[in-house]
Image (cartoon, rainbow, N blue to C red):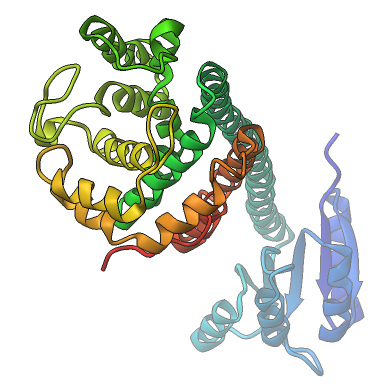
Length: 406
């Protein structure tokens, strides 16, 4: 059952207050009394539904009280019925300007008073209903926003876990390559660091540098499909054996093909294209120039440089100077000319990578890949960070900050 409305009656004349009180109580309303303007303002804390003000009162006039009620956000929604013996047009304008919602002239009819009161209370009722609905709507919007934010957090977490799973796949496949060829553990770490170094040097976006860093270690995953007697043969391969060895590029692409993950898609194009040559004389497809994906062109150079500077059972390691001379001679033939120039300009970074991931240091591939996964998680959590911050996080995966080409 709806509670009766409460009306605050403010008049300095006791007889007028009693008349209004009796009439309003007869119509079923609760009535509060105020003897002057200050008293009325104090009793607003009782939250009346309507204020009836006399205009001419000692101290604060009805106009001043009305103005203060409407200036206060907590009370400005309370309707005001102003009662006055002043009939001039200017007084009516002043009443409206002060904030009165209605004006009743003395002497007044009690029936007319009742009509005016009901009309103003109806406006107040609808205002309260609208306010309640707005609060309810705000609550529902806030609750829905909270649910959406929680769903986005769960989605972000799922995406991070998916990317970590992709990195875990790389880690496992790289370990498989390590077990099949003892020389590849340090090679994997150096080659991926060279690839990221070169990608950053040519000013690829940080996200692309990350992708190349994480995808490049799977360049030779197809060697899993090459028989041991060929893969581990210390002597020169026969023509048939060499043709079968070349198949590892296609084997790797087949292993990685079909994933919706951009990381594994890049890994597949690297596996297929890292033995292609810029002049079109590579394998397995014999494509040339920019037909070879940029990621594969980058890894091709990094892979060959590390092979030249690494000792194998069938050869000694070349010095960096000799290896760089060979790379320079293959500019435009084996390698992308722009990549060659950028790579040769990274002498200090190359030296630091070789020091960190040297064969003698016996780099722990398990530790390094776990470090990569942790750094990748940090990068994912900084999605909104400035590019420089993401660059600093990427530096955790490399031995030193790399200077981009200017």
